[in-house]
Amino acid sequence: MSKGKSTQTAEIPEYMQRQQQEVFQAAKGIAGQPFVPYTGPRVAGFNPDQLRQFQATRGLFETGMEYDPLTGIQELAQREAPQIGQVGSLLSADIGAYQSPYTEQVIEQSMADIQRQADIARGQAQSRAIGAGAFGGSRSALLETESQRPYIEQQARTAAGLRQAGFEQAQRAAESDIARQQQMAMFAPELELRARQQKAGLLGGVGAEQAARLGQLGQIGLQQQQLQQQALGVPYQEFQRALGYGPQQLGLLQSGLPGQAPISTTTTTKTGLGDVLGAGLQFASLGLLPGGFLR
Image 1 (tube, helix red, strand yellow):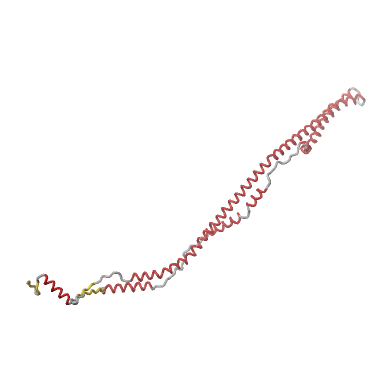
Image 2: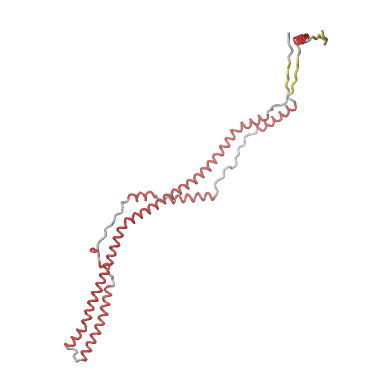
């Protein structure tokens, strides 16, 4: 005995089919557009002020690197330690070199002054001899001699005193000079070490300035490298966009495909002999006869 069969048919409404077809055609048209790369400028170059700064920085670097401070530091390190120098004594000093060049002029002027006084005294002695009527004789000569003796002695004392004072003054100058030389000889090593330290500090400052200028040069080099890197990145970005263009267009086509649309369902049922017999048995079990009558 055969049983009945049931069949379901799903249909998309005609208006929905038209809408989906229009959307797909529009997406297909958009997806068919060719890839158009951007060819305009995308990286800004350096402005004139920045270029002048780069040029000035290079100039500072070149002038700062003209001197090698390391050579000077090595030269200072290789020098021997300064020693106390030898200074001569007063015994070997030339005292005459310290005497005043005007000593002889002072002596001569002093002698001339004394001589004028002696001449005055001689004239007075001659006047007394004339008054005594002894002019031209031995008594006159004695009077003149006695009048000149004090002045001759004064000239001798004066000349000796001036020369002694000049010698002592020259000796004190020589002693002072030798003492100054000894002091300089004692402090010379310390002064030399201080000078070396100062020079080493200056050389260190030059090295630090050179390092700073080298860093400045590196900074402008870094800026230029970054600009070049950006310029290199532009075509690479366009290349990446070109690679993603195909999947992007495919996504446009997929967006134009129909989604979940409303479906109308039609159900058709066919009855077989087995279904009829089964229904009869069911009626019999209920005490119903065909036609709706009870037994």
